[in-house]
Image 1 (cartoon, rainbow, N blue to C red):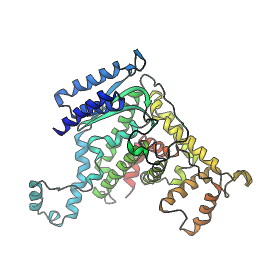
Image 2 (cartoon, rainbow, N blue to C red):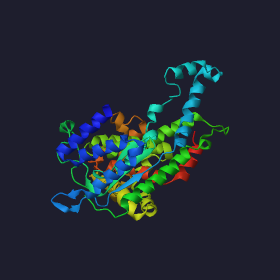
Image 3 (cartoon, one colour):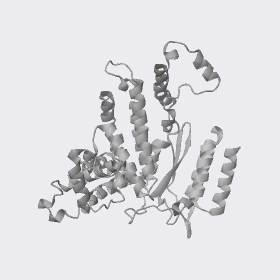
Image 4 (cartoon, rainbow, N blue to C red):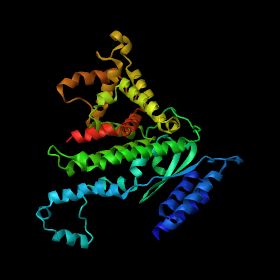
Length: 412
């Protein structure tokens, strides 16, 4: 009853406000809770209303005439395979159960208590796939191109066919009246999309997720040195992968707060290092980042790239602009910064900022002089799009299933 009341209230609000955000939220709720026998009808009705929606000021033009509906199915087999780690960890850390005594487990289960719940609340995204779609749906931030309704069997995505503003120019809610620092200039614009861009981008992303979960759901990948399945290793990889997607998704939904995005970038880069072995010096080295972008441009189909690649390109521009903050370099021999090339100095400067999440100033003796010099040479201007490096490296990582399969097999 509570869900029905919320849907009814949302519908009334959408009708009263005539605001697209309210309308899309109402549709999102409708599709999320529709009964199985009604689901197809509800989805078709929402799509029909999307395609027939008139443009403001010109009723003959259809605002979302190229909209689409896309269903991604999540296999129950994936849930079972990822749950195995939690079951075996309960056995490993429960003395009675590991000794073969299951009486307390039966009693707990009968009373509705948690039994095999090791870290399960850190792995919620695997159930509805919302976490794993968030970077895709936010791939054109701060513009908006699609929204999803999440169901137990998988998400239903409604694509718009072109981009619209994803934020309001003023406060969208009372909390936006509190101080925060957003972009000082626009590095994006509303854009029309190729006819197949939305479908191709969603299909490409779904294929990458299929490959990813084919690896993280393969128990043989998580064998130890004795070639025995290691549930600890498996669980930690699952948690790290979800952490990467969740934090990139959070980054893309925070365009109003540059500081939040920057902190998220640092933790994303740490997570990427954990999944690839590449440290922050390499990930923030402009030639390396440019190489990764070129590889993505070559591997992602052109239509899909219209949605998936703009943020990655903006990240490269921002990393290049970061070097302009070294205001003393014109007075240095060869244009170097404290004896480093601009590319290396910029990467080291990002590392200085990452380390400053614990407070500014280096603790290690061998870093003190360089840290002090970099802070003195740079004006502290951080391009608003620099955190999009986190999205670039997620995009790069999910294109390489063979690489991360090998990495997981070798790592402990």
